[in-house]
Length: 252
Image (cartoon, rainbow, N blue to C red; front, side, top):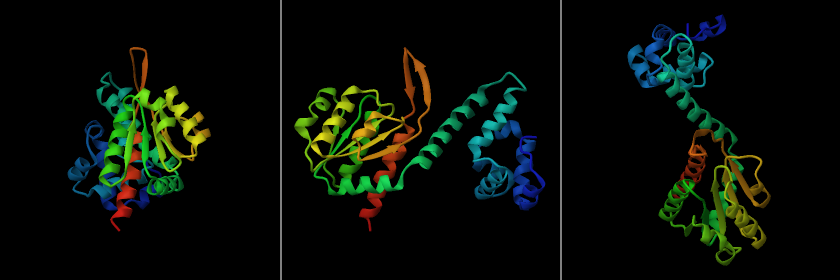
């Protein structure tokens, strides 16, 4: 049995929720590859009912349910394909949840205040993280802000020539592995411009120079050619939160 309930939880379930739990326990092989919408359709219930039943069973959501099923099945047979897929999905779920839980609302509000008062927003990033920084820049420009991206090492090294006290700098970095960005953070701090750091590692030396530090939780995706590649999902969540909040406040 995949989901085991104590008497108290069993008594708290509605008839529809009982139907969902019974379906999951009787169709474990199928459920490990099904979406929450598929389960609702098969049980003739709603997505909300399925979600509620899963949570009452003590699971955070469909990702954790599928992982639990796959984990049990993995030890019963040799087929690991669904297990591996659900493990990956659970990592994404864990990253998103831990990032959302750790985001400081006051940090978001303070960052938006800095952006609104700044002459320019200078956005620092390197490598694949630049893709998130570029989208953040484009979204800010669409909202009418003067946003400039700093992703070339030679430009980053020239920070002192570009930035002023009236600017705000936003750094996106997963592991803070670029020495030039740390040097720029020190320069920005010395000049007196506001600095917001969005990263996924703690503690970080960048915190010493940042007015706001917004942290996410990133997990390892792969090791290849001597490199470790970490997920950028947490940084995307942070950037999306800032942009959507700014857009919502502008529309009022």
